[in-house]
Image (tube, rainbow over all chains, first blue to last red; front, top):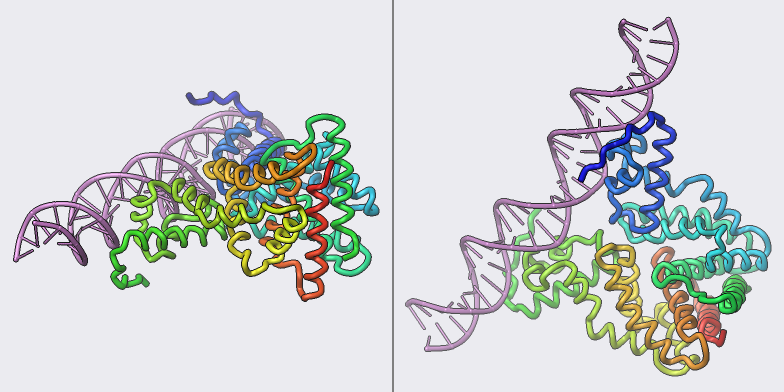
Length: 193
Length: 193
DNA sequence: GTAGTAAGTCAACAGGTGATGACAACCCGG
DNA sequence: CCGGGTTGTCATCACCTGTTGACTTACTAC
């Protein structure tokens, strides 16, 4: 069963964007190693060779996915403000406030590929630069790096949990309690050691 | 440079054990997908074909690694007793009490391969049976599953953190404070919602 | 000592991977 | 109408993976 291509309009920018979107989708559901260029190309409705042409290599494509500007903006937005509003936003994200779906996806993309030989150093660098560093800089008091890492561990744990088992909250009341609990967790993580 | 085999003593049990140990070591440092049977065989000083012979397939080998009886015993031992002693043991493990090195490694093996298409369902099942289920059963009060998952998220986050950035504690004093912090985190995770 | 079986070795396979370079179709300025 | 560069297609390469089956070596029972 071979798809008959409806002749793709010749538009390099749109094609690149389609590839990037397809890659994003795949990398959010599998690791760097399990996702193949051919699947991505199929999702994008594009010949696999075009990926190499436009992005160079698979590694470069992954790097491009990691450094999408919107993603960076969103993650940066997570980590500003005082601890209370930050706790609010982290809880929102973890409990899947619709606005934050893409942020969760961004974390997922990174966490999925953290055990890959090729991709792990990119992931580490991105997490460090986008998360650990700004949070550390934001914190007053001693042991800032450690407290930032505690927050990182919290977020990572919750996101992996969600992908393993699905959402925690079943009804609105539970969700409210969980929201409060996660805010407490954030405050505890960031509080003075 | 080809190793000249010092003729391996013909002992099927010892060979199987060597393969299992080598596989354990590799899977603790890479994912199911990045680790190759040839590397494992080389570590064990064994011909790659023997792995298929003794364990059937790579998948079966991974399953064998996951279900090593000592591991199961150790992880089970983590999750018994009241919340205070449990918090103590979790903090010990996360802060690398030497006794718990292998337990940390066991979690690592599972987390490394959680994004693999082939291995993820095995990992999920193992985590559920060895961690979520016993903890849920141990808890009194409502929302037991959710609180157990919160503990799971905590452990997962800390272990991923450790493999990404290394140990949190630099000196004995920091270690003491962190130990107390993690105990608080465990209590908070498990406390009534 | 010799047959028979267990243990280990070797070479090769089929399948899938990312990547390349030659080709075809298209669009646009002249 | 027609060259020239862009955009997309196709076949193929070299490599690596897990797995298999035929072979050799060692050990044990008779």
